[in-house]
Length: 175
Image (cartoon, rainbow, N blue to C red; front, side):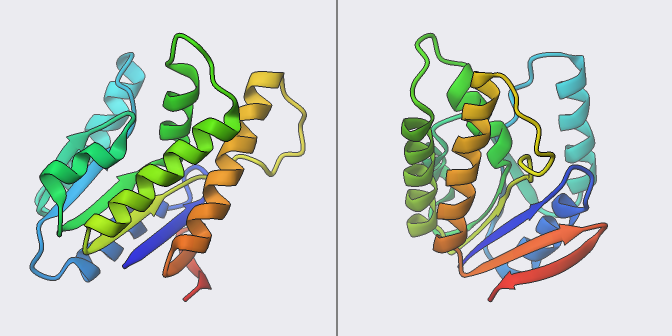
């Protein structure tokens, strides 16, 4: 079972994703697959806040800023909350010495998520809306936005359920 949860920044999608996976996991171990690279005080603070929010909810945290399918070695057959696609796409696009075309990055990420989906009982994926302001950015940012758009469309097609969270309210887009 795969659920894709999308929404804007601060929409409540993380809290919804945690509740969703808790409902779907049954007696399986729950893992939180964190993709944020902890590069500075701000990112470490965000990660700590997320860990505190999950405290006591039975999650084991795995930090994997790229190559997320490698987490299957630890999580196979269980329930994983993968958060989030926007961090993962940025890591894959901008943390490499030699930049790759956005289509290549998007395809690699989709294949990684497909592998996770095949190897898990439950996969809940969180992603972001980053395309709605209509602003034209510099080339690298536009490539990132295009990559995330490809990823989101492909994951939505793959998912059993797609939910958009707006102002804390879940809206079922696909069931």
